[in-house]
Image (cartoon, rainbow, N blue to C red; front, side, top):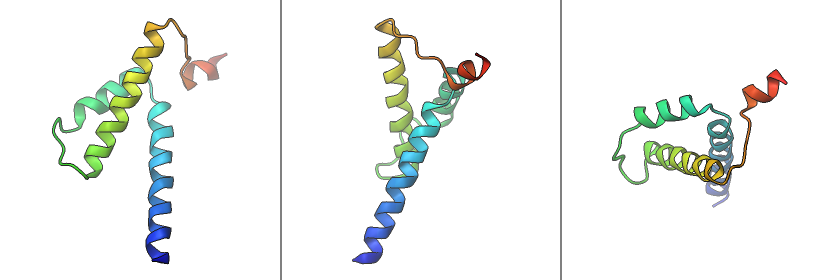
Length: 80
């Protein structure tokens, strides 16, 4: 039981790190990643998780753009 708790905690940490990495990508990189992933990944696979995270990030950006909210990418912030 203790081992599974540690493994689930580690998995959660890795998913959070992946979310942060995806959110830091440029729009072009995000689109390229989405195109490189299989359109119908099997449920429960790493590909499915990645696909869901990429689509969530893309949808979040689309909603922000429609609302007129400007959110600079990390690269843009570094230039200022």
